[in-house]
Amino acid sequence: MSYFAPNIPLEKHCFFDRHGGVSKDIYDSLNMSICSQDKRDNVLQNLNIAAHYYAKDLSNLNIIKQGTSNKAIYITTPERYKTFADGAVTNQKNIILAVRTADCAPILFYDKEHQVIGIAHAGWRGALRGIIENTLDLMLSHGATKQDIAAAIGPCLQKQSFACQADMLQEFLTYDKEYENFFTPADKTHWLFDAQNFCINRLKKYGINNISSSDINTYTDENYFSYRRNCHRNLVSAPFDYPTHLSTIML
Image (cartoon, rainbow, N blue to C red):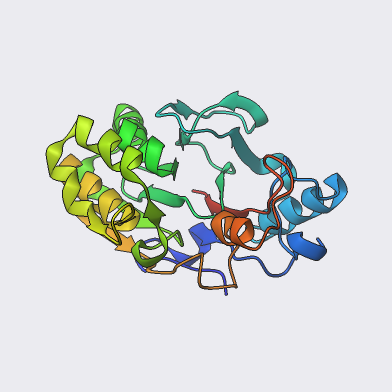
């Protein structure tokens, strides 16, 4: 089932799962990745299905060109696949902010009092480099306040499934030695990384106290797409050829 955070109004957001779409085979069924080798028409139909949750259509969806950056942008008019960024903010009605994920953490931000929303694609690189804080900074510059922002972390790769090697651990330690607390040794050459709690830690340090997290593991829960699971099953035959879900929020 799609996931709904307890601290954001039901009608204002949705972390979509993989069901309810038109795609087939490894993209079954609500694949939102235009970069995959899924049929383009199927992806567009799936995007429309997501927009219809809000009684809107594709023209209302804002979809950024994601990567591993810490860049957040302010949106006044919906655009799709034009601007490279990993976070978006708006205070405009009828704009559906969206990010695509398949293991990375999607984070929604909602300030009901000041009518400002934000969204972040928090992969481990983006989270480490500050995408959470930069998205929140942009919200504050458009009228939000820390005490009124609710933050919701959606389904993502959980610690028990997030094995990594020493190079990733060392990259975190170059930022802050205390980040070692988010890594647990798995064997002599691998560690388990707690991405969800790392994001929670960054939110709390920023001053956000209204935080929820799904605790849903995209790797083990087959209601969700997982890039890592597809790799382990030899289902990724080309770069970016894997399905993703959509996480969305609207005023």
